[in-house]
Image (cartoon, rainbow, N blue to C red):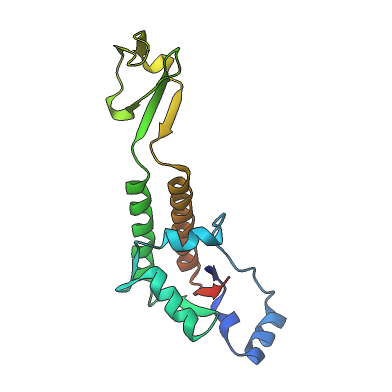
Length: 179
């Protein structure tokens, strides 16, 4: 398992330079992806490409050499990391499933209709035969067809995408380290 974080570039210099800069400028806290459990990090990166490599495999390869390792450095890696952030969002949207409006019959049978198709209609319950009004005003709410693990992985993808964008906006190198 691994984790990402970003620090100002001057904190990666040799120890003398870091001490000199710390005397002039107070050290800044590293930024990290928010609310990403370490076990979700690899799953979030599983289908994502970074500079021609699978992002997950690239992180593991860098960690085999040393920990922590620089994963991306601004400005040279800015376009590649932003493409990776875009991929994370795109995959989260694709895996998230379609939003659906939910209804329930008196017998407990659930019905879900994609939000795009919702219009008032009635149907017979397939279990008890009662009429179920699929009227938006009687809906129980909206849900997603995705399971809990998929929702967690997609949340991790969104947080990781936001983190990559924030690090590049600040011009900070993104580091990867062992968990």
